[in-house]
Length: 145
Image (cartoon, rainbow, N blue to C red; front, side, top):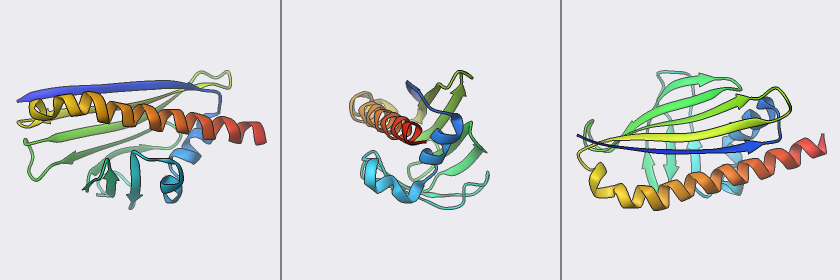
């Protein structure tokens, strides 16, 4: 079984509450989030949600939904073990008006090696672009408060 990790992070001058508010305002994702263009559903752990990311549609299972701290889900392509991904968003509060926002994904499965270059380029770039846009919106909102 092949494995791959993508880890990104960005410092944001905003409270965890502000970052969470923007991050979980899924209805407005199409206005700013090119990577995750659609997110729908009930995020209680154990539920499946509908996500469109990078043109692909999938229905991951929510593992963690810890307000102002973390969202984590696990999804699969067709069947378990082929191409699975555990995605996480984490907000780390530095308690000085700044936070670190982490976005990571842990891939495993038979097809991971086949898609490794695409993951390194397109997926990682999508994470970085989303992080930067999240930072921009949160910091603008903090200045408006």
